[in-house]
Image (cartoon, rainbow, N blue to C red; front, side, top):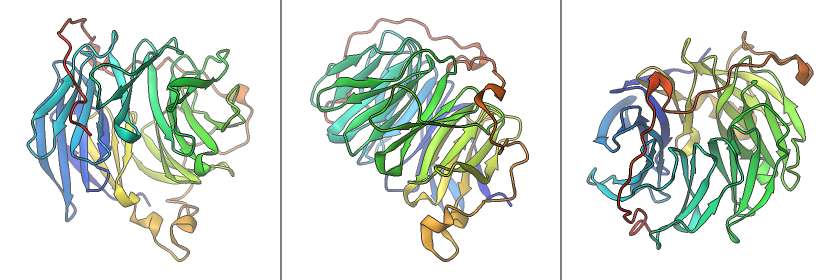
Length: 363
């Protein structure tokens, strides 16, 4: 049986979602540039922020580590910070990138990473108004970021079918995978206490990389019938995937197997996923104007605690999934994934603004 969900109606199609680091507070960025945030109380969601943050699509939203501010990024190439206490935009960085921004990721010590449609990654520090590093290892849009805490590294995936690993101490690229693949990488997370990197691909394959060996993946797990567009680590051995077929699945990593279906968005592809504090709720968004908040309490039940609960199937076998051990050549290619913000025909416009400090006062 699938988990129950709270369906929160939104003002427009959501592009991204995230959870507050310590509170039951979920935020979404919308295709019209608006940002909404909702507090979960007693099985309901109460809107606490509704703000027009950008002139164009708000592709990415992330809370700062202390949860005091919500960072946003847009196809208008601007990044902003919304104060959660007042709901006001407190700082911004205009023309932060030369191309539309696709994703952002807060890191330790006030550093924030951002990635754009041209494959450029920038690092920002709250104590400086300009980017502290610019990395141009990729040739197509940056699709996702993950943080490997043990070695203090940023992992980025790109539609050019490669991943890169940046050492945040030296602010230099430590490794990049081979670029002879033709399967776009669309999502990434880190599991096994930092020893494995899992990426979701256009062909529905999960690629596993061993930390320190990034030339090519060490393992491949086919099974999703469509592209894997979103990934979150539920625990060190289990990930949750969002796929183009509208299904949200629970996947065991090493051993690689489908455990079950968490929920679904019908015929709409799953674009983003986020876990709440304590991993009791999962947020998911699709092409409809709805934020779905799934109850994951069943994964924490049964004797044996969280580790054993993660091994229990959420429901019966997924009828859409392919659990067989097929070779990679049996995976059928799919159309290339359109970049965020191009759905509905909205294209980012080039603009020129005077630079302003974005991350000042964020520490």
